[in-house]
Length: 351
Image 1: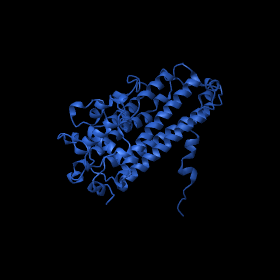
Image 2: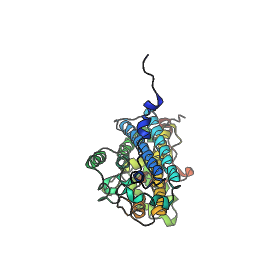
Image 3: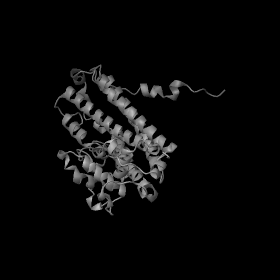
Image 4: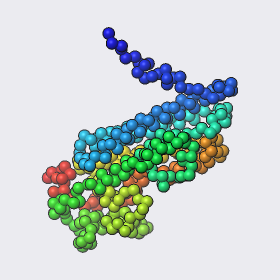
């Protein structure tokens, strides 16, 4: 009879449960809460591993030269990104457990940890790189890999050199076909003479007109911003932008007409990206407040400026912010241009 699978062996529980070695015990200065501290951080690293596993699978799908916007593959992408969001929510809630440890409890073993620090989590840095956080957009560039071993630095550098999820989303949005199919716009109705501008797509000329009409007098600065974000003139491109004007136009169109069947999955994909950013931001915010509550203004065990570093990273490390900022250009539903019957049929609502 073949050997039957055993729960303990399958999960390698003996390895996992024997992987906690408090420094305070080694030094005969027992600190009760160090066990909690170790288990919480080991759990974080296991979840980081799962997040990397999910994101890598999504990247492999998004790398394909074509991806049907109403396909099982895109459903898989949305599902796995949603799983990432749920995992990140768990990471946030684990801080609740960590905060049961008081500042005095932490001081019982804090000095024994130096120079170990959560800042040395190469998995988290790799995750950020795969999602789309570039080196030049990081806070504390000179410091963020300074305490890692060379093999870990190599892993992160390799991740930074590969196409990120954000870059692949940009390419996916740029491939949106609707604007290049003349039949979709043959019977498109316009309301303004401004839409006769030959160097602009008929839909975007019309939408720009309606958007500017919707602005309050206090929002006049948005006049130039619209063209800066959506113009096809490449001279307007900012070197620090992650989304091209074509990708921004496609993303906004998806937001505006997300009720159509073909656009529902693309809208869910973008929503999950924004949710991932929000949960990462929430995690950083909770972490920052926990550090401030626990060690005040003291430096971190790894030598960082503690709360001040975490606050600066929180303010700067938004990955999908350009998608979030597109909400600045939404208008009310009753102002939206009416799509032609041909376009409605293309999007799944045949008349």
